[in-house]
Each structure stands twice: as C-alpha cells, then as structure tokens.
Image (cartoon, rainbow, N blue to C red):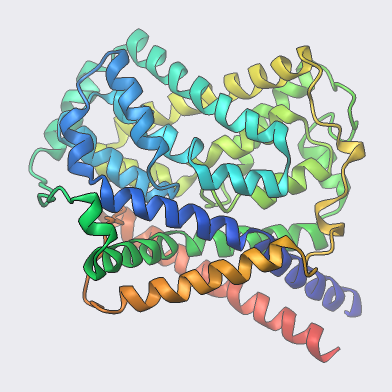
Length: 408
C-alpha cells in the first residue's frame, strides 16, 4: 500500500512538472494563434481556397500553419472550408498543417524531445500533406465527396466581417476579441492537456519498462538501429496505442517523451505524435460531419500516411546520421522541474499576460469568441461527456496526489 501511495505522489508531481515545463509554450502559441485568428477570419480562407491543384494545397497548408493547433477546432474549420467549396485535398492539407505545422507544437516538442523531433514534425507534416494529396488523386473518392457535400448542404455558417488589423490592435474591442479567442483556445484544449499530462505521470510512475519492450518490439537499444522490421512494427503499433488515449496533438507530447525514455525508435515516436487525428473521438466527429464512409476513408488515408511518413523520416535521418541517441539524454522524469530558470520567468511573464487578456475578455462575458467547437450530432455529446468525466477524474487524481505529497 505504501508503494502505491508513493507512486501516486510521484505521478502527480511528475504531471505537474510536465505542465510547468510547457505552460509558457502553450501560452505563447495560443497568443500568436489568437492574434492570427482575429486578424485573418475563416471567411478570408474560404474565399481564396479553390477546389484542387497545387495553389489550393499551398493555401490550405499556409492557412493551417497560422491557425489553431487544437484538433477539435481544426476539424470544425476543415468541415467549414469543405462545406464552402474547398476540395477534399486542400481541406485535408489545412487539417494536417493546423495539427502538425503550428508554432506552439514545435515549441512544446523542443522542450520535451529535442531538435530532431522538431525537424521530424515539420518535415513530416509536409510529407503527410503530399501523401494525402496523392492518395486522394489516385483513389478519386468522387462518390464519397458528393455524398458528404449533400450531407452538409443544409448547414450554414454565420458570415464574418473582415477586420482592419490596425484598428483591431489599437482598440479595446479588438483586444477583447483577442482575449476571448485566447481563452477559447485554452477552453478547447484543457481536457486533452489535463488527461495527457496526467496519463504521462501515471505511466512514468506505474508502468514498468518491460511493458514498453513488449509493446514496441526492439525498443531500448539506445542509438542502435533495431532493424527495419522492428522499426516498421513500432510505427504500426504507435497509432493503435494512440487510438485509445483520446488525446489531441498537444497532450500527447509528454507521452511521446516517455516513449523516447524507453528507447522507442524515432519512427515509433513520430508515428505516435502524428496519430492525434486517428484517435477515437476524431473518428466519431468526422462521422458526424461527413458520414461514416468518408470518415473511414479519411482514417485509412491518415493511418497509411503517418506510418509511411514516420518510417521515411526515420531512415532519412539515419542516412544523414542525425537520429537522436536515447542513451545520451537525461530521462524526462529525472529532470528538476521547478528550478528558478528561464522556464520559471517565462511562466510568470505569460501568467501575467493571461491575467491581462482575461481582463479584456471579461469586458463582454457573453461573447462567444472566434471558434466553433462542435463535435457533430450524438457523437459530440458522448465524446464531450466522456472527456469531461475523464478530465475531472484526472483532476481529482492530481489534487489528491499533490495533497498526499504535501502531507507526507
């Protein structure tokens, strides 16, 4: 019993330490995202994205890059772009860019994993977009697209006005919108982040190394190459493991860091990071938007693309002799989280910024913000309830564990 309580305390402290490491990165990313979303509304994106072709793919990628990293917000905006006439390939390029190429994700990956994984994230995001474009061109799912457009034809989005950037940035009302959007970003991701960071702490404290060795065949070999069979198997297992975590693109980074600690290959870790769009809630949301046939088609496209991309990145970096050396890294759970260093000062700075933005946002508490956060049909309510229950359970686990640490 004492061993369980000690592990519980360690898990809670580790989860809090992970969040302490990443708070300023989340805040910086969401501040940048909020500025962009207020200054460049979705209607502007819809007006410039065409049906298909290199130009539309490039625009979809660019708009995704400057958009939100929240998987659910990206799904909602992707649905709106597709509904308003964007082709499936440009819409998918937006979706993949907004969950793989955004600034805040790169910062969090730098904190937890290192520069090789930043290269993998951005290069892999581009490869995923190119793969999706080629997959759609080869398979030509015309009937599925027609059926999905018909399904969405009765739904309409409210028109957006085009703001003047100078007026927005020099007015109280403009900063009110920015503040509302900033907190809407946090509102959309807090459950993913809470569950992901809590789960990372639990795994670090309770799950033995042998579990990872059994699940990811060939893991734990340091800088050595486990072989193409093991690398391929790890890239295949990673999305299966991610499918049942319910965690989005920002919450799964500390879990990926734990995989790195246990010697999982670069391909396996990147496949896990890329799997934020193949988790169960995303499948249900897409089914609510487009129907099950197109939703399963998108799932098959993303799964095959992320496995191919992860393996290609692994051997690309191996050829360049740039694969990360697991044996030379300090374990993520052995770091001293709460030092008075740049992380502490950045956290205090962005905590102050958050308080300031909260003051602006509360000038119009009834404001709805900039995002749609819809999960579609019955799947939306079931998913939201499940995530809320799991989130509250995770919060109770953390508070109790920290309380035990304080008492003991």
